Amino acid sequence: MTFTDQTNKIVDIPTTPLRIISLVPSQTELLHFLNLDDQVVGITKFCVHPNDWFRNKTRVGGTKQYHVDRIEALTPNLIIANKEENDKAQILQLAKKYPVWVSDVKNLTDACEMIKAVGAITNTTLQANKLADNIQTGFLKLKKQVANLPNLRVLYLIWQKPYMTVGGDTFINDMIEHIGWTNCYSHQTRYPMLTEAEITNLKPDLVLLSSEPFPFKEKHITAISKLCPAAVIKLVDGEYFSWYGSRLLQTSEYLRKLAYSTAKFN
Image 1: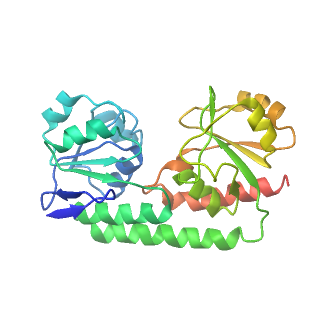
Image 2: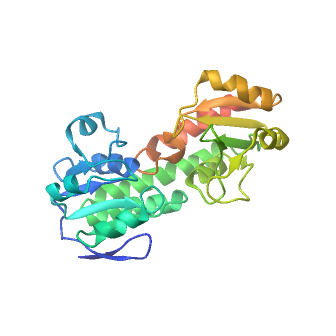
Image 3: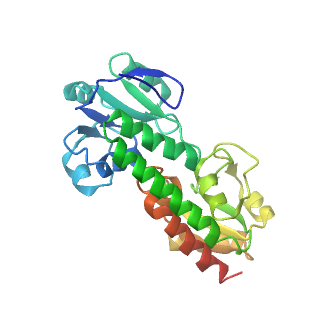
């Protein structure tokens, strides 16, 4: 069968792919949700959910660097990748030998389209469409729940040395906006680097320290509080802000709780 991926590339895929490699943690979790345990033969070392897959499935490397020999040994008839998370040059090399379907997810709409597309590709359309519908329902409910909360200016940090934040073209930015908040760096793209002086000059209402990719901890709050003494500073689970597969079923409730807990300080 022929499918068009989210980068507008046409991909020829077997009618029912039986040997799937996932190179994206959030999409690996989606494949598990769709009950494709027997079909998924390979994952990355960052595909930590579900734990039994992490322990038992063949790990073909990271999201940027793969062990080609392991991929070849698995003889996949479908590789699922992502434009941002995977290395373009390596994906193009893999596509010369195997069907590679690439997602490109910048917002909730893209995520739901990805979920439905993966469902169509893996012959799990009913489950995938229901999942996407339930996710959208959850976020519509979230919009109503946070409608009367203050619109805070948010600095979301993903890295420490150097400090890095998120631009307006990222999935994380879209999650911030779904809470009704404003990303301080929505006017920029990708992942801008910041100096301590720039962080201080921003004067954000709220600073969110993500658990990934840099694992911010309680000890880092002190350093940020010195830069932003008037801001509320909170540690957040980065998976709820950046994982765009089945995790989104729980994300809207996580964001609601975060919004209400933060409103108490403002």
